[in-house]
Length: 187
Image (cartoon, rainbow, N blue to C red; front, side, top):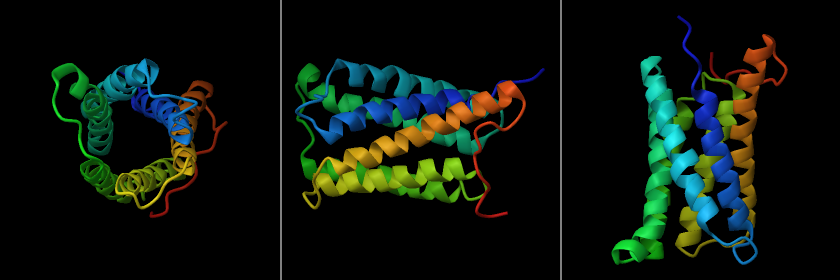
């Protein structure tokens, strides 16, 4: 029995949610953080990636399990950090501590990037641009950088995930390479 590839589901959940959040990051006054982004963070960025991670576990893919489950839980934790202060009345994290939150996710992503060196270029681009995004977000929280250009980098990261997801779906559906994914850096 053939088992479906869960990676496109996880990549789309990550990619679309990342694009929408980073449109907000380009201009928070014009694109406020609202229920649409929070709902995407819970259901598509969060739950869909966790589902993909569980399916990767069944496929024996340690990298996919770790990546999708971790980033799904990232989205759920980020939404919780944003809404728990209003719901439960706990203190909102101070910017300096949010910087460390993003830094740790950046460190995790940098290590995961190393795991992509034998994978296709598309996957390498996703993880490289994501670890850069996390470090930029950390530096923003620490007051070292500012500007909507961080959101632009995040949009590029999200769109790279959407591209890889659709390449996997379209290439498999049509039985040939329509959208190339590139070659590994390491053989």
